[in-house]
Each structure stands twice: as structure tokens, then as C-alpha cells.
Image (cartoon, rainbow, N blue to C red; front, top):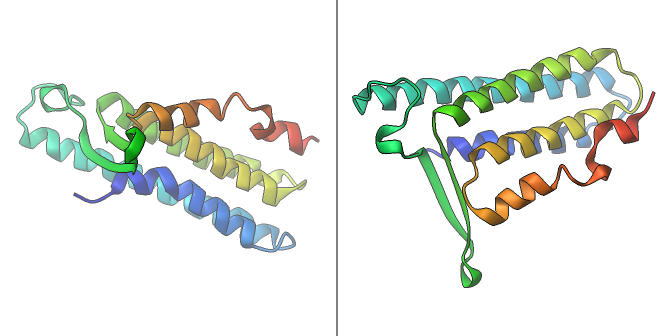
Length: 167
């Protein structure tokens, strides 16, 4: 099985790193790079929907959007800290599938809508990437420690984009 869920989760991080490596004077390149990574995330989310629908058809389920036997599909599990039992475990079910697609669509729309902003453009799109990582990761993750990271990052006011960018 391909690691499509991990790719969808960490693609915004890669996009943010690429955006932060571009010189701040190249504003249009920064913007279109952010749009490109957001569009790639949306494309992967749509591919995931098609793969999920195909797996759903082969399981002969009568309900579209339900995983066979109430399980998650496309499971990935990696032991992070085996000594204390911390694992990276992700999977997708019907509701998380559409939440990720909605997140990917809204990320693309928000990045495209922010093209008129001229102040700290590099920071803006870097923070968009961080937000995409948080929101997508929160939907897929099963284990308690990664969930606490993805949920806890919203409680830190230093990570809110509007606070640093201002007008």
C-alpha cells in the first residue's frame, strides 16, 4: 500500500519549506509555489477519494463512504518511540475522507484569495503551510501523542497567522 495519507499530511510542510527557501523579493514565485503545493494537495485528496471509492466497491458495502467492517482504510503505522509505545498511525474512513478534501479545497481557495496581500508574503504562505499540516494531520491520526500535537498547536497563540502579519 502506498503512503498516500502521509504524503497528504506532510505535503504542506514540504511546500512551506520550499516557500521559505525562496528569496522574499520574488513575491510572485512565492505565491505560485504556494498555489502549486495547495493544488497538488487537492489533487491527492481527490485521488484518495477515487481510491477509497474503488476499495469500497470491492468490499461490496452498500453504503458509500463507509469502510468495510467499520475499519479504517489505507492504514499506515510506524513505531516512533517503541520503549514507551508511541506510534504514528493514520487511516481514513468516510467522514475524514471528505474533511481532508474540504481542507485541501479551502487551503487552495484561501491561498488564491490572499494574492492581494503585500505585507510579509513569505511568512503568510509559510503559515498557510503550517496550518494545512495541522488540519490535515488532525483528521487522519489515530494515536494519542500525535493527536495531542496536532490539537495542541491550535492552543499556542504564537502560531496564529493574523497576530504576526497585521495590516
